Amino acid sequence: MSNSIKQVKHDFSAAYNQKWPRAYFDAHLSLDYVIPDRAKPVFERILAEYRRVRNKTNLKIIDIGCSYGINAALLRTNLNLDDLYAAYLEPGGPLSRVDLMEHLAFFRNRGLRDDIQFVGLDSASRAVGYALEVGLLQAGISANLEARDLTIEERCDFADADIIISTGCVGYVTAQTFARVYEATAATRPWVISFVMRPYSYGDIAAALQDFGLETRHIEQFRQRQRRFSTPAEQHEILTTMTKCGIEDQVERTTGYIYASCYVSSPPGEVLELSSMANN
Ligand SMILES: C[S@@+](CC[C@H](N)C(=O)[O-])C[C@H]1O[C@@H](n2cnc3c(N)ncnc32)[C@H](O)[C@@H]1O
Image (cartoon, rainbow, N blue to C red):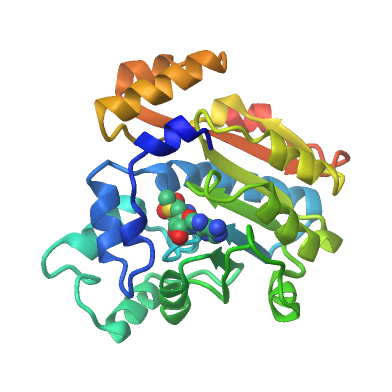
């Protein structure tokens, strides 16, 4: 992450590691954070493509930076992110109370699908613990893999994955984390789908995945809205960096939102029919 962006980027970190997710949803709604919602249909299309190519039904997904299990909640139910914002934040909403049984029942009653299993990785141990306790994750790993290697037990949790996903986390994690996760599950050659806040670079992560034989494509049609700029200073710094990097910033300038690029990595022989998917 460029140092100048680091200095002005909105700091959500106080909400990352609470016992309950309410502060996270509150902080993120205030900047209209929508990337998990915008990413959901893209993930679903690529998951369908993966099932077609690999002829598989049941999928194991690793979510890097899983937080409170938000991508798992969206992909394992028919809920959208507004449903979650309302459930957690509306006074009297079904997830507004500090009651684990109610949270468990909420997700169970939404018919959590069993054909998609999630293993979450996040440095925030309480967030991972919540996602595990309410049944969104089958396994949760609370670790900073920028700083240390995986334990044998953690490697077992990651083994046999089909897909690795990430939203809103590249920048906090680098190629180091992706390489460590991939190495633990490389035998099944999972695909990797990342949404990366512009203008962060994905070059080092793509290079690390190339060492495992994956080809990475930047799918421009899948660029999605992430959240509103938090301040004029943040907007100025991000737009200036984009200009310096030669990245077209028209959508950011006109909408006042930060966008995320989508990168998909897969083994070269596995051809994704992405052009037809993007036009659906
Ligand atoms: C903006 S949140 C994104 C969460 C979720 N993926 C979403 O889109 O709602 C960033 C997440 O990255 C996690 N994170 C920060 N540093 C990390 C690290 N070194 N390893 C794993 N997760 C990290 C934070 O705890 C936080 O949950």
